[in-house]
Length: 205
Image 1 (cartoon, rainbow, N blue to C red):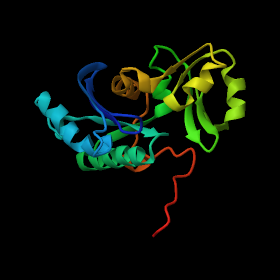
Image 2 (image 1 turned 60 degrees about the vertical axis):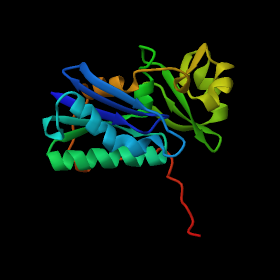
Image 3 (image 1 turned 45 degrees about the vertical axis):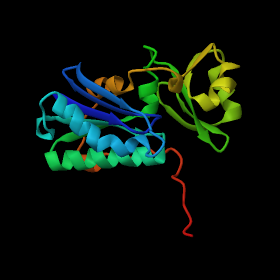
Image 4 (image 1 turned 135 degrees about the vertical axis):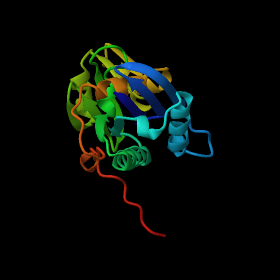
């Protein structure tokens, strides 16, 4: 089974092609100052497939990060995944960015990400939601934590070890694709963004 996995919810775009758990190709895209990294999602998918002599018709399953993360990135991921799966008549798998990040150090670590509004998204083998920052310290309580740059200093004070996923080179795309093998595929209509907090509302000017 060939799985095309992609993630634009986090700080970069991750695109991975795998088969039977073996990574065939992987690409990471940074924002370039002119465009947000998700702007390159379609063109990079095409590039990754061509590098292995494949076309979208060779793909058996689409795997994508559904959030939480950048609202723009979440929309890009889920929209592209739904369109690809619909056009190719294949199924999809949606995986939370929190679950993906819990695996980057090789285990099932506690994940705490900045949710703004004085809250943090917390994952402890399941999504605990958007938790008030004052309560996060009680949850951390000396444990190893995966976090982001904005919360690293605060979390480090109560953690037994804290790592920011934004400060290292972690195989996030590969982890996404391998997790997809453990999930039950769904019809593209059932693939939904994971908005733990409601998306921002923009007023018309």
